[in-house]
Image 1 (cartoon, rainbow, N blue to C red):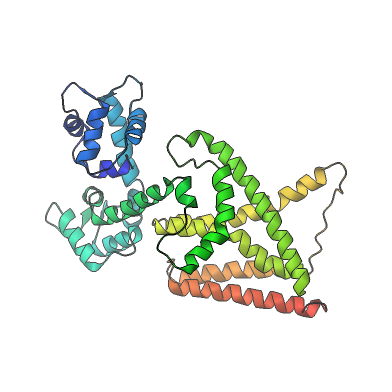
Image 2: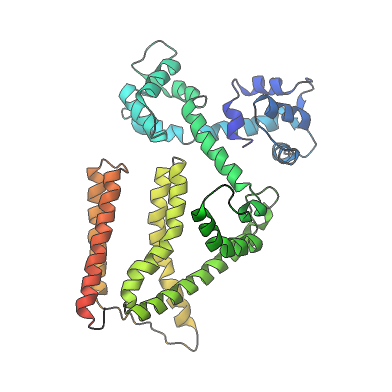
Length: 375
């Protein structure tokens, strides 16, 4: 919150900005002057957060920030703001001329902010054109406009909201809902044991001063995931045996959905922040990890144990059929995405749901006719 948001509201080169912050003109910035900067730019910050920001800028630890230290932070923060803008601009600049036209600008803005309107595009063009020509926009004109635009402000608002949510303490996480209906209370009572257990045992490293516990939090999180996975598999097996559902069907439905929920949540979070590529690559990378690490690691440990067999036999009938169906699904997905212009649309989402439904239907029918005890 003390990096990108502040730099986005500063205008001018490093020397000019430094002199503005250095109120007493002694060539250095102390903590009080840095606090005045936050106050001037409308950022509410506690003394603890101010001290943390100041310590990050004070590289030599002498209690003041010299111009060299400030320059490193300022330039680095500017690069963070523009880091994801430059590759997108270059992608739309197909002829590598360093400029884009109005239609390309509109698509670029929609890539950065899907909710952009025609009025936003017109306002952007009039604001960023310095040389009077509205036919072509240079990267310098676009970048200077972007860091002070309403589109950037929208994205910063989402990021700051996320930061504020992450900064909530344990009491906030465990507090009951206020002013909400019965559904909210039912959800609260259902998840309270899990939330309470993880809040107590896993340090929240997003809060100031808790970063040093990151490795401990990672290990405890893995332990909880292992425990939850064991309980989920045992419960699914009991339910399947009770209702006469084969283990293969339970694995394709209940177990698969349960293990994919974290991927779904993480993809939704990054997609809402405008990182569509990250949302898609997260799901792809997760599945590759499941196949190349999640499958071989358990049987590798099992076969290496001195008292266990050296071979694990795959007893699932029809495994080759499922593999070829998986390959066919991948080809179908690529074809659908290509037909949608490599954009995530509602039609694309509906077609993917249809493919999943067809996959479940064929799996259930195959197991129904293969296993006489099914149903």
